[in-house]
Length: 417
Image 1 (spheres, one colour):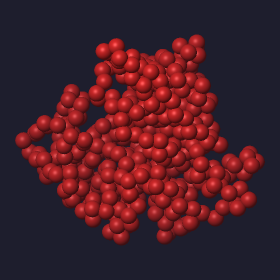
Image 2 (spheres, helix red, strand yellow; image 1 turned 30 degrees about the horizontal axis):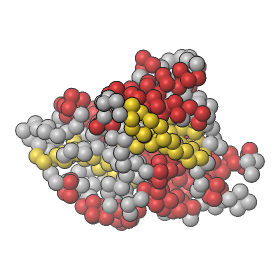
Image 3 (spheres, helix red, strand yellow; image 1 turned 135 degrees about the vertical axis):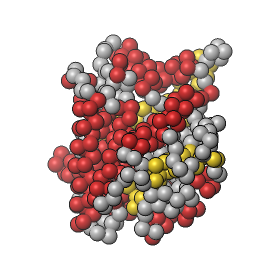
Image 4 (cartoon, rainbow, N blue to C red; image 1 turned 90 degrees about the horizontal axis):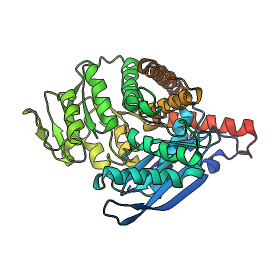
């Protein structure tokens, strides 16, 4: 499977087969079509004085539960189908987490690594300016995603505020703290993944001290997952990013790697005299307890699934496991904690940031992360309860069912159609 939209539809169809809905509302047909698909083209002056026309996307999938919400992905190989899939997942993720949001996703089709910082600023501000009429604190609230960060959200906030002639900070989340961002937002997604692992371990009476793991992808999410697991006494025996894959049977010094990547932007040339390169083809075959794909979609396919030698896979990335690979993992009795729950800590803390901006109040990092821990535990227990009611379903299907139920109830109560 090469198309990520096929993946989300397959996962959704699995849940449909388990869902007994009110046919007079046909919730499925309603959810299967995004509300708006916006494509823009806008000119940006580059440093050499040339003009580059940049393509941008915003897919607003569903807003029955509240304003659209979702990140902005910056990459030269994104597509409308990819953004559409991520928007669909955001609708389900926000519903599962019982947030007052619908789902959306944005994209800017450019390789940010091949342009200067000044060019990236102009590209970012151009996107916000051209999307101005489609976004707003009660309409659509963008956030960072792969390829974007707090600095980009700050630039977009500035462009929006100038056009709106307003100092409203609640339109974008994931901003720097100095520009109205929430303390704890940077590590929130990774922190949420770690909370899921702790909850899973508690449910299964597993002591995490000394347990081993692989992390594929060492960006914002993967790095903060690794830091959190290191604090729990877990041992990272394999680590990979887009430049290299490394193995260390005695365990990596995660703080050393984190500092190296902060300075060098990637793992290339990292060497602690104990690690050794491993081929990408064999990386997922490293024996460990937990595998954490934290990179891109569809990274674990049939070959990787057959190689995996672990107890659990937790999807820190969106859609990293193909349906055929998932079938193999289920037959191998490998637990999968699905993306729409596992990596939902980011949108939960984005919600906290939005609340703080609207209320003109700010919480400490400890308050924010404590609230996130409580929310992850609350939703995890609902998922486990759903699985007990339907013992034959996967955790992914349980998450989908809870998300769909909440949307259907909202449609019914509003008399939407």
